[in-house]
Image (cartoon, rainbow, N blue to C red; front, side, top):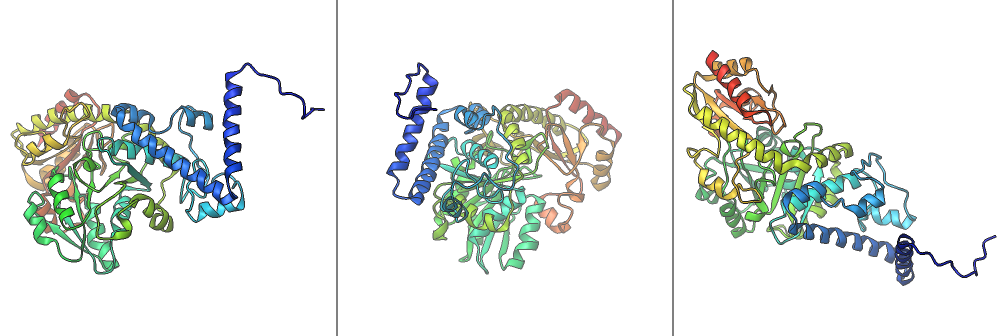
Length: 478
């Protein structure tokens, strides 16, 4: 029988001594706690502080280091006994440490990692993706950033805008946006009692200012826009929004934080469809909201801690949660984000230059071309960490011959994939007027520049000479 009073045997082991020290620290915390509730609250606060410090520390690391590790470091690997980010696919977390622990978690009074109450509300795999995105998007600003991952880009748009709105409130949006966003604003939001007005000259700050009204609660812009590659003047729009005590919300899905970080230029909130170039393998669908810790808004309750307030309320209530295996797939895709964006941007510029000189092409939309109306602005805003410029993987072009020629082109080109998708490792081709923007009126499409002869072309990682040969062959058939 073990004699509990015998002298402990001294162990010549650094591992054992470290374990003893950690246990002694935990015992001291328990002794100092006034109650179970006091202990659980302190544990939660310490976890949050640790993660916040990790995000702030990541600002001193290079982009590729952050995109590789995120906040999943050696300590996490030891805790989970896994070199790779584990997939916590169970709808519930581990058993509560006590009934009180569960009560505090369910009421969002504590947020612990790895303690989770329910995957619809909180999940360790998804949290690590959110922390990586927050670190990448906020890498070039001093302020702390926070992120929330969701089931899709559309759910991200909804939950980034809805919290600001009451019945009768107003959104002012650029008209150069993705077709699904337009449908959300034009079809769904009026049913909620919210109105949306469109800025048809979004390059003009005066056009924005003229349409701001008393009920306006936010400015919304997509840059680079899909499919016309409009580049928004984020610093100018942010100043205008803040002059009216409004947040600027930016959809930056096309660029990704490798190439454009809107928070650096004054935006308050950034949204992404992370199933696009950030999830370039195409194995998962998801969305994300990233915000500064403090934002500008006329809604007092949302000024501080916007992401966590949304997470604990509307997100929790509506249930647009991301699937944990999808979170892990996108977390892995982010490892090579900057490398892929650089390669895709280089290829896209060569392809755009080829098309721009072709006699069967009316016009090319690509911010890397000097003919693009916001070319100089793009050079200022769209930069990699090493300060080199890039203009994204996406371009579009108008084919001479109208609708019939555009449809014929997508039928005959023998390269890439014809799908209503973009940001893949492989090239994708799309005719927006009959797919992504097909539900709009022809008048709305024309105002957006989405003519019947427009082709959207998302450049992949294939050999650029192969892509150009395929384009040349397809155009020669028209």
